[in-house]
Amino acid sequence: MDIKKVFLDLGTHNCEGLTHFKNKLNIDKSWEVHAFEPNPRLDMKCLNNLDLNIDLHKVGVWTEAGTFEFKMFGKDGLSQGGYIAPIGTPAYGDFHSDTTVNCINLLEFLDQFDNDEVYIKMDIEWAEFAIIEALLNKGWKQNIKQIWIEWHGQHITEYIDKANDLKTRIRQVSNTEVFNWI
Image (cartoon, rainbow, N blue to C red; front, side):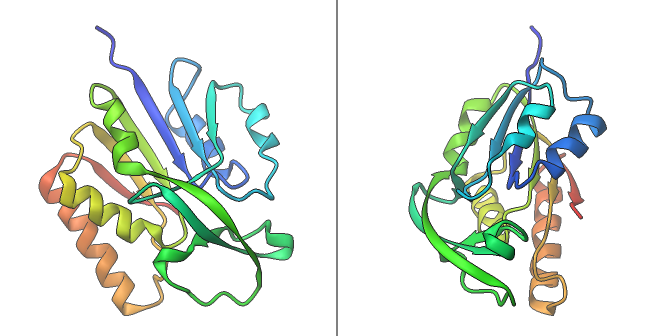
C-alpha cells in the first residue's frame, strides 16, 4: 500500500511557503495539499500558479474550533499577516483593522491523516506556541515527518526560551524533524 504524503501550509499568505516547499519536497499532484489562510483581504490567486491539487481553507488554525477576532497588519491589511485574538496583542506598528474569522481545531483536523506522512509549514503569527503545546499535550502525531515553524518573538528572551523548550519536547517524543522557518 502506498503511503499518501500530505502537506499543510498553515498561514499561506501569498504562497511564499508553498512555492518554496513545492520545490524543496518535490510536491506534485500526488500529494494532498491543504492551504490555510484566514485573511479575507487576500485573493489567493497565487495558488493557481502552482499546478497542484490544493484544498484552500479560508479559516485560521487554532486549538479549538470557533469564531475569533483576527487582527490584520500592513498596508490595507495585506502584508505581515495577522493573528487571532486569543494569543494576546503583540505590538505591531502598522495595525490596519480587525475582522471576525472562523478557525478549525488543528488537532482534530490532523486526526484524518493518521496513516499518512505529514509535512507542515507553520507561519501563524504567535499561535504556534499554543498549537505546538496542545499537540504535545494531546500526544504528538508520530506521522508528522517534518515541521517548519516561524517562531515569533525571537527578539524576546521569554519567547526564545519557549520556542527552544517546545522544539526540545518535540524531539524527545518523536522522530519529527523540526526546522525554523524564516
